[in-house]
Image (cartoon, rainbow, N blue to C red; front, side, top):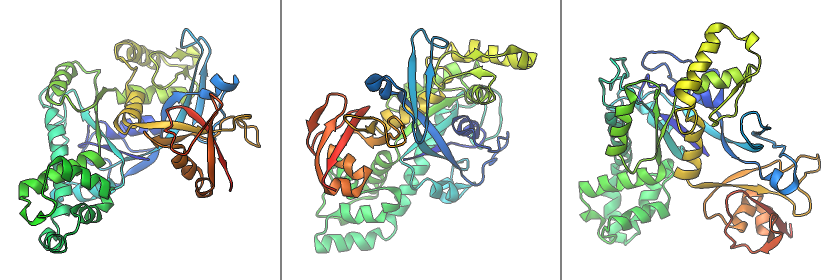
Amino acid sequence: MLIGIVGKPNVGKSTFFKAITLADVEIANYPFATIKPNSGVAYVKITDVAKEISGKNANPREGYVISSKNKLNSEVDHYRFVPIQVIDVAGLVPGASEGKGMGNQFLDDLRQADALIHVIDASGSTNEKGESVGPGTYDPCNDVRFLELELDLWYLGILEKGWAKFSRQMQQEKQDPSVAIAKQLSGLRVTEQIAKEVIGELDLDIERPLSWTEDNLKAIAVGLRQKTKPMLIVCNKVDMPSSKKNISLLRETFPLLPLVLVSGESELALREAGKAGLIEYIPGEKSFNILDASKLTEKQIAALKFIEKEVVKPLEFGTGVQKALDTVVFDVLKYIAIHPGGSSKLEDKDGNVLPDCFLMPQGTTALEFAYKLHTDLGRGFIRAIDVKTKKTVGKEHVLSNLDVVEIVSSR
């Protein structure tokens, strides 16, 4: 899975990226601080089901587990963090689809992204060129519009290449247009099924693609983009007073787009303080503990108190950064977390408890999960066992989030 972090320059993209990865990236207050894409590993947060089944915490091969015992929560909570790949690309400006700014590189870097997190400056203090302006003087709704437009034009440009020639061939040879369209846009993760869905939703005449108009092609481009690059809007800098009005306007203007409020700078400060052992902080929580105030300067203590009072407590999901990651994976992409495990023993040969966790599309069957683990397991599939219930299930059984599954195979 690859999540693209996108947006125009100077809105806090690189700060957001660094907060979720703690990668060493340049953060600067000028356009195009990011030239080459930054890639790294971030984590989505799930319940540690190993504790529920065995009374032991998981010992993951990747990601990590955090246990909190009555310090940050009233009850004992156990979380497991599962890794995902993220990429922070060069800032986008209007005209990117025509090569303006870092447009060509920006778009090319996004080809394999499963979903996009669009970071915008909710305070309205960054104009369309990525330049700093007075807070509240710029409408961030424009950013959402122009990003969608640039992506749509990108898809349309690829679709239109050679369209006259291959549409004529499709019509003469009575070929399925979805096959040709999927081939033309395969680099953008467009499949025949996705192309077929979009054409069907637009009710186009599949036997006469030569009759399709320019508006039809634009509509196809929009539909393909929406299905292959679903988007989450991240309203950054929400701790600034001018953000409140803009957030209401964004929700009113784009009611169908998922939106999460965040403070990237606050999350980065908490993550780095946690990494340094100065505070105890679980990403996504609404509180944190200072472990040893004597190790902090007065300025650092004041900053932490500001974050706690003005950001973490007022917002519904702390700084909102962890919520953004969880939302794009589990709500936008609708993935679920599945664990391979034995019905009689959760540990591997090294004693690791539920060491692996896979993020899979909603609707994944037991057989599909077997193939994900290993081709031989899929080919030799006999049955699967739901470790929680101890029930045997067949290959068509649809798995649910946080399932633990044992695959029984002849290979």
